[in-house]
Each structure stands twice: as structure tokens, then as C-alpha cells.
Length: 146
Image (cartoon, rainbow, N blue to C red; front, side, top):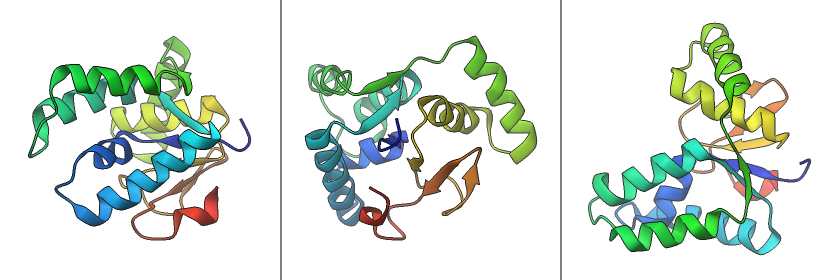
């Protein structure tokens, strides 16, 4: 959709991980903004990565049932299911842009969603890939892109 924002896993993780205060605050603001306006987009991969990160990798892991509740809420957003076409096209992105395969899946899912913007800290800020602008909201004001 034209006015939606695709979120990479790291944004959602930071919204629930208080160990990095600045990133937590910014991510929480983004999540609240997108939630209120129903403009968030994620993929199944983002859901899976989020679950693993917040239950095992952050400083204070969330209880499994809390992580599950968050995922159940996120299922109300526009959800991209990584199918065989996203997988094959991600391989092409990997070859063309030299992204990791997993990052290529994120970008290809954002392309598939038709969201014009992908919020992530894992790519070059301002890079455009197949009409999707990648914005690192920790470097510049994310409000300029919503």
C-alpha cells in the first residue's frame, strides 16, 4: 500500500527491549504511530526473527507468552507471507545488491507489500531498491517518511 511502512525486525525488537534507551524510544514511537494509523507492514520472517530475538537474545528476554501476545497483535497489520516467488526474487536481490539472503528476503517482502518505505538499521540509509526507500530511523527523523 502506498502509505504503509514496512518494518524490519530490529525496529520491533528495540520497541520491546529497553537496553538501548534511544533506539527503544524511537522504535516505540514508530510502533505506536503505525499502530494507531494501521500503516505497519511486516512479513512472517519478521515475526519469526522477532520471537527468537525477544525470547533468547536480548538482555532481559520476554516470557514466551508475552512474545506470543505481541505477535498476535502484529498479525493485525498487513502481513506478507514469504512464498516461492519472494524467495526466488530475493536470490536475485542478493546477487544484484550483495545483501545477505535473509536481508534480501526482508527487502523483497517490502517490495511485494508495495510499501514505499522500509525502516531498518541494517542497510545503507537512503538506499532505494526497486522503488522501496530504506530509512534508518536512528540516523534521521522517521517522521519525514510517514
